[in-house]
Image (tube, rainbow over the protein chains, first blue to last red):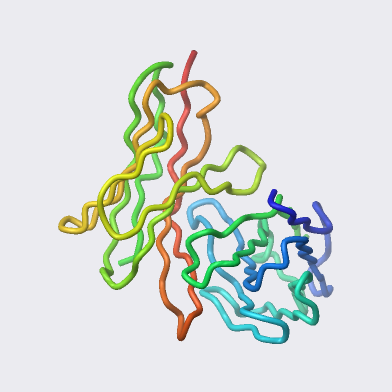
Length: 113
Length: 114
């Protein structure tokens, strides 16, 4: 998985609770991304980062926030989890400015009850 | 219209068959096209990428881009049971300056039967 770890790998939580997912890379890549993957929708970009403290919204950013205080870590926070946020979350990294080589982590399975 | 359309399948073929996986796109203003392979309960792994148009070959895999028809294809020769996975096509878009994002198709589930 190209030096990418995600934690936790599985999580069950209740509606209304905050949740933070962590992505850690050892590749020193500049770009980091958070996606969610759902049946019938495929992979959709939530937020991405193009440097420390530099982040931007993706296609499905409502209800999510991110932070990147170090090159190696990119955090995704669900401020108040809802059942619609039950999904598999993938982190990806890229060194390339043209974005053609994104490498994905192993994923986090989140269930919101 | 979604920017990348992909037939979800599923597609089931016998071992040794030639597999053709296809996507269409609607916006010509981008450069790179990618194919990712995703095994069940795993993260996507980059299989191939190609620039603009033409063919790119890597072992049993060939990626093809037809700009005139806005069509991208992945061909797998001599398919093996280990090729059974979901295949995702993607293309990059410029989100401003030097920042690029990928837009994915929904994926095609392929099963290669022994």
